[in-house]
Image 1: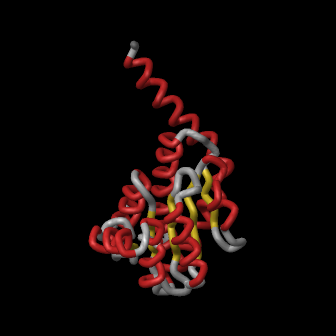
Image 2 (image 1 turned 90 degrees about the vertical axis):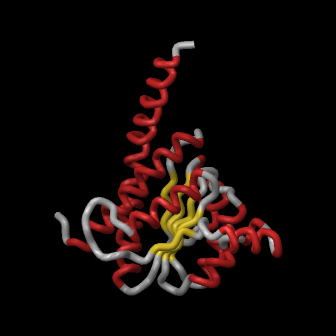
Length: 196
Protein backbone atom coordinates (compact mmCIF):
# COMPACT_ATOMS: atom_id res chain seq x y z
CA UNK A 1 0.00 0.00 0.00
CA UNK A 2 1.29 3.45 -0.95
CA UNK A 3 0.37 5.53 2.10
CA UNK A 4 1.74 8.74 0.62
CA UNK A 5 -0.54 8.37 -2.41
CA UNK A 6 -3.46 7.60 -0.09
CA UNK A 7 -2.82 10.70 2.00
CA UNK A 8 -2.39 12.80 -1.14
CA UNK A 9 -5.74 11.55 -2.41
CA UNK A 10 -7.45 12.68 0.82
CA UNK A 11 -6.02 16.20 0.41
CA UNK A 12 -7.05 16.34 -3.24
CA UNK A 13 -10.56 15.00 -2.55
CA UNK A 14 -11.04 17.45 0.33
CA UNK A 15 -9.92 20.42 -1.75
CA UNK A 16 -12.12 19.40 -4.68
CA UNK A 17 -15.17 18.93 -2.43
CA UNK A 18 -14.73 22.42 -1.04
CA UNK A 19 -14.32 23.93 -4.50
CA UNK A 20 -17.41 22.07 -5.72
CA UNK A 21 -19.39 23.51 -2.78
CA UNK A 22 -18.63 27.19 -3.38
CA UNK A 23 -21.42 27.93 -5.86
CA UNK A 24 -24.06 26.12 -3.78
CA UNK A 25 -22.98 27.45 -0.39
CA UNK A 26 -21.53 30.97 -0.70
CA UNK A 27 -24.87 32.82 -0.88
CA UNK A 28 -26.57 30.86 1.94
CA UNK A 29 -23.48 31.26 4.13
CA UNK A 30 -23.62 35.02 3.54
CA UNK A 31 -27.32 35.00 4.50
CA UNK A 32 -26.50 33.00 7.64
CA UNK A 33 -23.81 35.53 8.58
CA UNK A 34 -26.34 38.35 8.33
CA UNK A 35 -28.96 36.44 10.32
CA UNK A 36 -26.50 35.54 13.08
CA UNK A 37 -25.06 39.03 13.27
CA UNK A 38 -28.52 40.62 13.50
CA UNK A 39 -29.39 38.16 16.27
CA UNK A 40 -26.28 39.10 18.26
CA UNK A 41 -26.72 42.86 17.71
CA UNK A 42 -30.29 42.58 19.01
CA UNK A 43 -29.20 40.87 22.22
CA UNK A 44 -29.90 37.31 21.11
CA UNK A 45 -27.74 34.22 21.25
CA UNK A 46 -26.74 31.34 19.05
CA UNK A 47 -27.29 27.76 20.25
CA UNK A 48 -25.33 25.06 18.44
CA UNK A 49 -25.70 21.28 18.41
CA UNK A 50 -24.53 18.17 16.61
CA UNK A 51 -23.44 14.58 17.25
CA UNK A 52 -19.94 13.10 17.17
CA UNK A 53 -17.68 15.22 14.99
CA UNK A 54 -20.54 17.66 14.56
CA UNK A 55 -20.69 18.03 18.36
CA UNK A 56 -17.06 19.07 18.17
CA UNK A 57 -17.93 21.52 15.40
CA UNK A 58 -20.69 23.08 17.50
CA UNK A 59 -18.24 23.53 20.37
CA UNK A 60 -15.61 24.95 18.01
CA UNK A 61 -18.14 27.51 16.73
CA UNK A 62 -19.20 28.57 20.24
CA UNK A 63 -15.57 28.86 21.35
CA UNK A 64 -14.75 31.15 18.41
CA UNK A 65 -17.62 33.48 19.35
CA UNK A 66 -17.11 33.52 23.12
CA UNK A 67 -13.35 33.80 22.67
CA UNK A 68 -12.27 35.18 19.34
CA UNK A 69 -11.81 34.05 15.77
CA UNK A 70 -8.97 36.12 14.31
CA UNK A 71 -9.71 39.63 15.53
CA UNK A 72 -10.02 41.02 19.05
CA UNK A 73 -13.58 41.95 19.91
CA UNK A 74 -16.13 41.64 22.68
CA UNK A 75 -17.50 38.25 23.67
CA UNK A 76 -20.47 37.07 21.64
CA UNK A 77 -23.37 35.00 22.99
CA UNK A 78 -23.05 31.40 21.84
CA UNK A 79 -23.72 28.13 23.64
CA UNK A 80 -22.83 24.61 22.49
CA UNK A 81 -25.62 22.31 23.68
CA UNK A 82 -23.23 19.34 23.54
CA UNK A 83 -21.08 20.09 26.58
CA UNK A 84 -23.14 19.55 29.74
CA UNK A 85 -22.83 15.84 30.51
CA UNK A 86 -25.31 16.07 33.39
CA UNK A 87 -28.04 17.53 31.18
CA UNK A 88 -27.33 15.14 28.32
CA UNK A 89 -27.28 12.03 30.50
CA UNK A 90 -30.28 13.07 32.60
CA UNK A 91 -32.44 13.86 29.58
CA UNK A 92 -31.19 10.79 27.73
CA UNK A 93 -32.01 8.59 30.72
CA UNK A 94 -35.26 10.21 31.88
CA UNK A 95 -36.72 10.96 28.45
CA UNK A 96 -34.78 9.78 25.39
CA UNK A 97 -31.61 10.54 23.47
CA UNK A 98 -33.75 12.24 20.84
CA UNK A 99 -34.60 14.97 23.39
CA UNK A 100 -31.08 15.91 24.59
CA UNK A 101 -30.95 19.08 22.49
CA UNK A 102 -34.63 19.97 22.12
CA UNK A 103 -35.16 20.30 25.88
CA UNK A 104 -32.17 22.65 26.04
CA UNK A 105 -33.52 24.68 23.11
CA UNK A 106 -36.87 25.01 24.89
CA UNK A 107 -35.18 25.98 28.16
CA UNK A 108 -32.60 28.40 26.76
CA UNK A 109 -33.95 29.63 23.42
CA UNK A 110 -36.05 32.72 22.82
CA UNK A 111 -37.67 34.28 19.79
CA UNK A 112 -35.02 35.83 17.59
CA UNK A 113 -32.24 33.50 18.74
CA UNK A 114 -30.50 31.25 16.20
CA UNK A 115 -30.07 27.49 16.30
CA UNK A 116 -27.03 26.20 14.41
CA UNK A 117 -28.07 22.58 13.76
CA UNK A 118 -25.32 20.33 12.37
CA UNK A 119 -25.97 16.89 10.84
CA UNK A 120 -23.85 15.46 8.04
CA UNK A 121 -26.68 13.13 6.97
CA UNK A 122 -29.54 15.52 7.60
CA UNK A 123 -31.30 12.68 9.41
CA UNK A 124 -30.11 12.91 13.05
CA UNK A 125 -33.19 12.42 15.22
CA UNK A 126 -32.07 14.66 18.07
CA UNK A 127 -31.17 17.46 15.64
CA UNK A 128 -34.58 17.15 13.99
CA UNK A 129 -36.21 17.49 17.44
CA UNK A 130 -34.02 20.51 18.23
CA UNK A 131 -35.17 22.20 15.02
CA UNK A 132 -38.81 21.51 15.91
CA UNK A 133 -38.21 23.12 19.33
CA UNK A 134 -36.54 26.12 17.70
CA UNK A 135 -39.52 26.57 15.40
CA UNK A 136 -41.86 26.44 18.41
CA UNK A 137 -39.89 29.32 19.95
CA UNK A 138 -39.76 31.42 16.74
CA UNK A 139 -36.01 30.99 16.49
CA UNK A 140 -34.07 31.17 13.24
CA UNK A 141 -32.47 27.90 12.12
CA UNK A 142 -29.21 27.56 10.23
CA UNK A 143 -28.75 23.91 9.27
CA UNK A 144 -25.39 22.50 8.20
CA UNK A 145 -25.96 19.22 6.34
CA UNK A 146 -24.75 17.10 3.45
CA UNK A 147 -25.99 14.11 1.43
CA UNK A 148 -28.85 16.14 -0.06
CA UNK A 149 -30.06 17.47 3.30
CA UNK A 150 -32.12 14.46 4.34
CA UNK A 151 -35.18 14.98 6.56
CA UNK A 152 -33.77 18.26 7.86
CA UNK A 153 -33.74 19.73 4.37
CA UNK A 154 -37.41 18.83 4.00
CA UNK A 155 -38.52 20.32 7.34
CA UNK A 156 -36.81 23.71 7.14
CA UNK A 157 -39.01 26.76 6.81
CA UNK A 158 -38.68 29.47 4.20
CA UNK A 159 -36.92 31.79 6.66
CA UNK A 160 -34.45 29.09 7.76
CA UNK A 161 -31.08 28.79 6.04
CA UNK A 162 -29.80 25.49 4.67
CA UNK A 163 -26.06 25.07 4.22
CA UNK A 164 -25.93 21.72 2.43
CA UNK A 165 -22.58 20.38 1.28
CA UNK A 166 -23.04 18.75 -2.15
CA UNK A 167 -21.22 15.55 -1.18
CA UNK A 168 -22.00 12.10 0.18
CA UNK A 169 -18.83 11.16 2.03
CA UNK A 170 -19.06 12.05 5.74
CA UNK A 171 -15.40 13.04 6.12
CA UNK A 172 -15.59 15.43 3.16
CA UNK A 173 -18.86 16.92 4.46
CA UNK A 174 -17.34 17.51 7.90
CA UNK A 175 -14.25 19.14 6.40
CA UNK A 176 -16.44 21.48 4.38
CA UNK A 177 -18.59 22.20 7.44
CA UNK A 178 -15.45 23.45 9.18
CA UNK A 179 -14.73 25.88 6.33
CA UNK A 180 -18.35 27.06 6.51
CA UNK A 181 -18.05 27.57 10.28
CA UNK A 182 -14.89 29.62 9.79
CA UNK A 183 -16.70 31.66 7.12
CA UNK A 184 -19.54 32.31 9.60
CA UNK A 185 -17.09 33.43 12.29
CA UNK A 186 -15.12 35.63 9.90
CA UNK A 187 -18.26 37.18 8.42
CA UNK A 188 -19.77 37.94 11.84
CA UNK A 189 -16.54 39.65 12.87
CA UNK A 190 -16.37 41.57 9.60
CA UNK A 191 -19.90 42.93 10.00
CA UNK A 192 -19.49 43.74 13.71
CA UNK A 193 -16.08 45.37 13.29
CA UNK A 194 -16.82 47.13 10.01
CA UNK A 195 -14.11 45.32 8.05
CA UNK A 196 -14.13 45.92 4.30
